[in-house]
Image 1: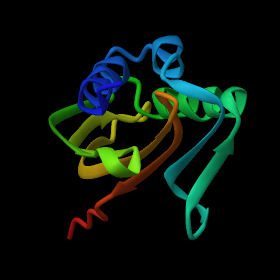
Image 2: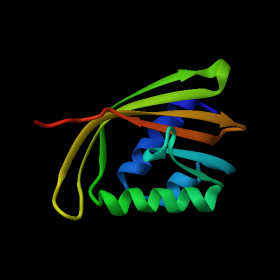
Image 3: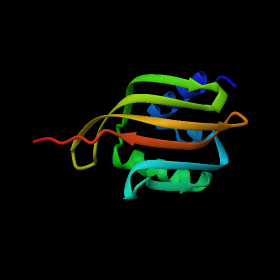
Image 4: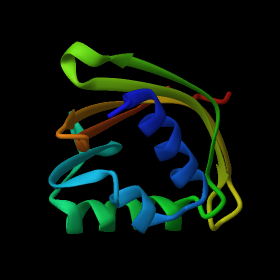
Length: 125
């Protein structure tokens, strides 16, 4: 498995809003941690079906979400990679979002077992 190629394909799948294609890269026992939530780790979704729901909520909350200016980094010895991006999108109520963030991925047997997402905190005065 080439982690860099997988990270690029994942970014493409996220930009296509193709949940089935995204999940094809994930193991059945995967974990997704989203940047927002009431716990220090944000919101955690465990298992492929829960991750599907978490991703669907992301696309509902930002229907035109796009991950641009992507950069991908790999630590092959750790079976890990990171993608940095500029997220842009508009909420259903018309609020425009633009934020830098990154995803940390951990792989096992060529599949994502953990995706941990972080966003910069944007404050507008």
